Length: 237
Picture 1 (cartoon, rainbow, N blue to C red):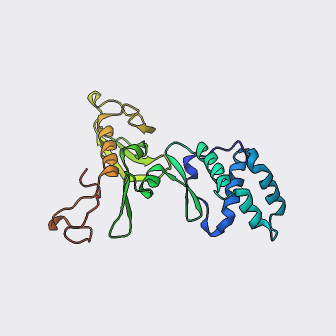
Picture 2 (picture 1 turned 45 degrees about the vertical axis):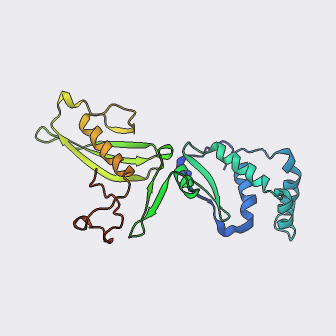
Picture 3 (picture 1 turned 180 degrees about the vertical axis):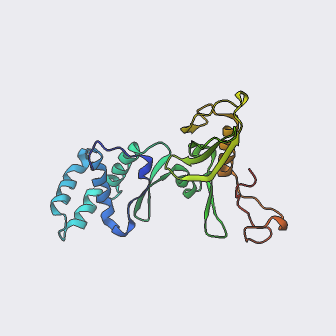
């Protein structure tokens, strides 16, 4: 890595695996240095002593001295990485492991407004709070026109590239009242779209924001028992 590299949403996930134990502390410093960090003066001497003794019997004790009783050295390195993180992402330590995760996951882990629940099949469902809902991008792909109809596929995904709530196909006879259809990739809703396409995108987004609900026995199709939460499969949109 070089100091000119940028941290993007594509870098989300585990940065330092917890299996490395105490060494993740200095590994975090090394990662920050690779992104252009300058070690503060108060930690520089201890860091130099540690680096010179790395892989020796004394390296653990020297690292503890360099990091300080309060772990301020690692905190400073983590803060630097956080300053480079893309909007909507947080660097979080958990059980000695460093990850860059969406802010709503950090919020849910801290007991904030974002909520998560596990479905009957082990899949995790998350209801982000209003402050942490991810931005969405849509892709509009045209298909072959036949018999005066035009068909488009509308797909929704978040800024990490993860596809959300499937896709919809929109087929209609082009009319001026519907508006023109621009194909390609767009942040939604920051572009004026064809009315039919816009409604399809809104339906896809509603599916990602729908909270779990409880229905009657006739509607229990997900395998859970009466009175348990059925998570939205998109049909309520």
